[in-house]
Image (cartoon, rainbow, N blue to C red):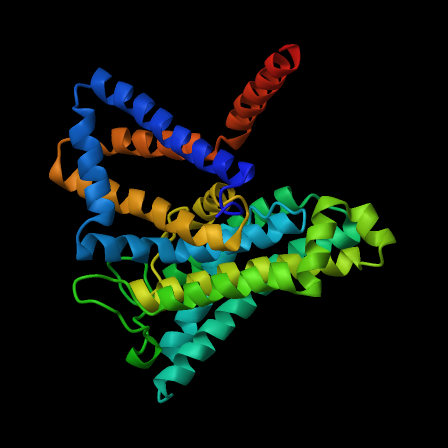
Length: 355
C-alpha cells in the first residue's frame, strides 16, 4: 500500500484531479458567456461518452485507432524522435489493407484478415523507414520530412481513390472489401470490432518491448542521451531506424484495422486527424503504453460524448470542440503543474527549515 501511495503517485493523482477541475471551471466560464448551463452540458457530455452500453462501446470503437497511433508516437518519442508522419503512415496502411481486402477472394477469413493487416503493417513501416533513413544517412530533420510525407501520402491516396481504385461516380471511394476480410463486429448497433482486442494485445506487446527487451533499453538510452548510448556500445543509427520502423508499423496497423473493422472500404479523408490525435494521447499518457490505453479511451469518449451532445442540444459544434480542447489542454499541461508543485514544496521546506 505504501508503494502505491508514494510521493510520486500522490503528486500524479493531484495533478490529474487539479487539471480536470481547472479545465471544467474554465469550460464553465466559456459556456456561461455563451448562455449555456455548464452542469447540464457536462452531464450530457460524460453520459454520452461512458454511460449506457451503446455509448460506452462507441467510445471504445473511437479509442481503438487512437491506441495504435499513440503507440506509434510513443515508440518515436522513446527513441528521441518526433514522428509527425503518423497520419500519413496510417493512411498508407489503410489503403493497402483495403486493396488486399477487395482484390483477393476465396481466402479463409482468418488468413485474409492476417494478410491485409500484415501488408498494412509493412506499408506503414516502409513509409516511416524512409524519413528514418534520411535522418541517419543525411542528418535531416525528421519533423520536416515526416510532415512532407504526410502530404505525399494524402495526395497519393487521394489520386488512388479518385482514379484507379474508384468504384462510385457519386463519391471518391474504393469498392467494399470482401466479407472474408472484415473484422467481426462485437455488438449490434455499434462499430466496435475485434480490432479493439488487437489493440489491447499491442499495448501489452509495446509495454513488454519497451521495458523488458534489449531493444527497448537501447531505445530509451538513445532517446535520453545518444552520445552516452554510443559510448555504451548501443548502435544508435540502427536503433533510430528500428524506432521509426516500429512507429510506422503501429500506425499502419491502426489504419488497416480502421478500414477492415469500421468503414469496410477506403473513402477520401476518412482519417480526420487520427495521427495527430494519437500524438496528443501519447503525451497525455506520459509516453507510457499502458497509460495510452486509458488516455485513448478518455479522449475517444470525449469525442463520442461531444457527438451525442451536438445531437441532443442546440450547442454549436465549435463550442463543443472548444470545451473538449480546454479539458485536453489542462490534462496535458504537466509542466505548469510541476512548477506549481515544486514551488509549493520549496516554500514548505523553507518554512520548516526556518522553524
